[in-house]
Structures are given as C-alpha cells and as structure tokens.
Image (cartoon, rainbow, N blue to C red; front, top):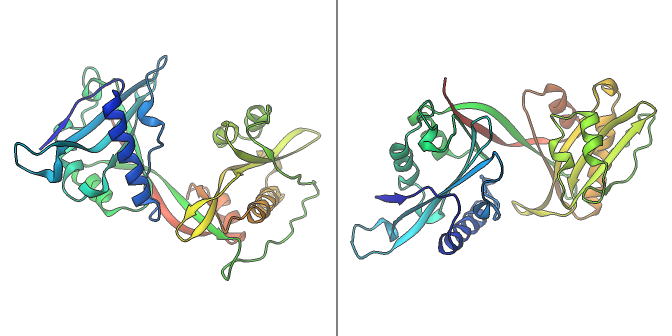
Amino acid sequence: MISYRWCPELDAADLAQVTALIGAAAEYDAEAGFSTIDASVPGQRSRGAVRVAHLPIRARRDLSMRADAPWVTVAYLNLRVDPDGLGTVRFVVHPDYRSRGVATLLVEELGLEVAVPGGWCGTGARRLRAWAYGTHPATERLAARFGIAAVDRRWTLVRHLSGPWAVPLGAVDVGIEIPGSRSADGWGGAAEFAAAVLPDTLAAASVPGPGRVIAVGDARGPVGLVRFDAGTTPYAEFRGAWIRAAAVAPRAGRRGIGSALLTRALGEMRDAGAQVALIRVDPADERAVRTLRLLSFEQEETHTLFGVSET
C-alpha cells in the first residue's frame, strides 16, 4: 500500500525527506550511471506558464502491514509541464524499496491517460516524457508492461585520457587556430555564439555554470564550439569530465574542425586531472558518432526517452 498527494510545492518536512531520498539514490546509482535528480528540483515552484508539481510517495516502513508502522517517503516524482502541455517526468525510488513493486503500483493507481479533461491526473500534461539513463532492466519491464513507448535514445561514449587504455591525442591541423578555453559562465557572448553555430544542438552551450568553452570563428562569423566541465566527477573508479555540447556550423562541415575542437578540449580535460572524457550523443547522428569513434571514444551506456502521448 502506498500513499501520495500532488502538491505545488513541498513543505519543510517533505522537502527534507525527498532531498535525503535523492541523495541516497544518487550515491547508490553513481557507479551504474542511472538517472539522478538534481537536489534543487524538490524546491522548484511553478513560474509563469510553466507548471511544477511534486508527488512524494509514502509507504509503511519496510512495507509493513502493521498499523503502527511509521510512514516514510519511498519514492518521488517531479513533473514540469510547459505551455504546450509537454510534461517532463523525473522519478526515483529509494534504494531500499526497489524491486518491491512501488513503481508498478504507482502507475497502476495513477494510470497513463493524458487525453482527458485537465490532462494527466489534472496536471495539464497531454504528453509525458521521461529519460531513463543507463540500461536498467526494471525500467524496461515497466515500460513493456504498460505499453510505454521508447521515443528517443542517447549513447554515452567514453574515452580514456590517461592510464593503460589511453590513446595519445594527435594534432589536427585545419588551417584555423584553435584557442584555449574560456570560462563559460563569464562569457557574455556564449548564447549568441551558440545560436549562430547550431541553435538546436547547442542549447546546453549557453547555460550559465562552471564550464569551459572553446569557440572558433572566421571572417564570416562563428564556426564551431565545444563546452566541457571545468572539474571532474567520479565515474566508476575514474575521475571523469563531461563534454556537454559540441557542434560545427553546417557551412564549415567536413573540414575536421569538430575533431580539432574536441582534441583541444580533451587535452585541457586531461591536464586538469580527468582520467576519462564522457559525452552523450544521438546514435542516429552518424557523422558525430563517426567523428567520436575516430577520436577513440567507445560506447559505454544506452539511455532511453520514454513517452506517452494523446495519440
């Protein structure tokens, strides 16, 4: 038996329990690379035309049937609904309560009807999307049971920068000087530059944060850029750093500029202490996959975007 209630914001007690749950799950899932929820998410509120809803899921401790067993937060769902009715779902179950039917029971009770007045569960969502990072068999079983479709996929590719599996970084001469990186957070022109190169791909390139950006241009304007993390995070037994965005303007394609940008970024990441570099890529983007393969990246994980729509 579970208990839940949608709320526009979490009170102090719920916020503390959900934050602790997210932290425990992130630590437990770190090595496997499964989905995590940022610690700031439980504190979010609706703003403007974007609606935010929180759903803490409770159960008796240890799923006990005893009436005197205390209620504890065993899972958490966050829903962000944009003005077009697209609902982005983030969901996590406490490690102690996994494989015990919590997620299945929640879906059975909430249902997946979106083509109804008020949208899904009255939240206004008429389409649902949820990323599952890492190949988790429980996620696949849940999707198959309820007919939840896979609508997109991403791969995580990994390249060793040091150690016995590292391949030396070769120089790439493209006739354009590739500068060193600059702080992404302190660069006021990041958004404009990203939009001029490839706006759809480079949304992440102009997001403020402690990242680094390498950008090149020519007499006709921006040519390409790559954004990567300034520091490292644990990845398996290694110190890893992420390449967050990389693209080259269509007019400058097939000149090796993407490889040159990535090679310069990889060198800086290695010099900053990263043992492995990581990037997520659309497997349908054959050119990007081929470029990364030639730079000695290897596929590590598959991620799936699951979706429910009115049709």
